[in-house]
Image (cartoon, rainbow, N blue to C red; front, side, top):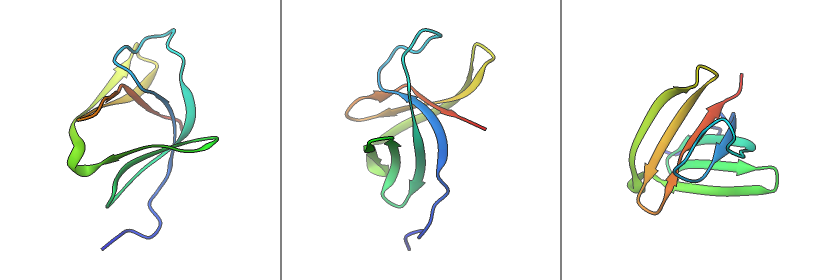
Length: 85
């Protein structure tokens, strides 16, 4: 059964393997539903990672500044989804 209205979280995101204090990020929203992990920017949908493509996810703190979810998936690496409170 598909969730009709999943919670969308405000995030900063970056696609790539390196993540540091000088990394350029984009603002957007992210949510998880039956299709997978969605990331949407100010210009519309940017990324959909299907559940079958997800390899791993790791939650960590970046220099004590923010919570970061690192996501590995089969096609590429999305290094950062950082929650905005």
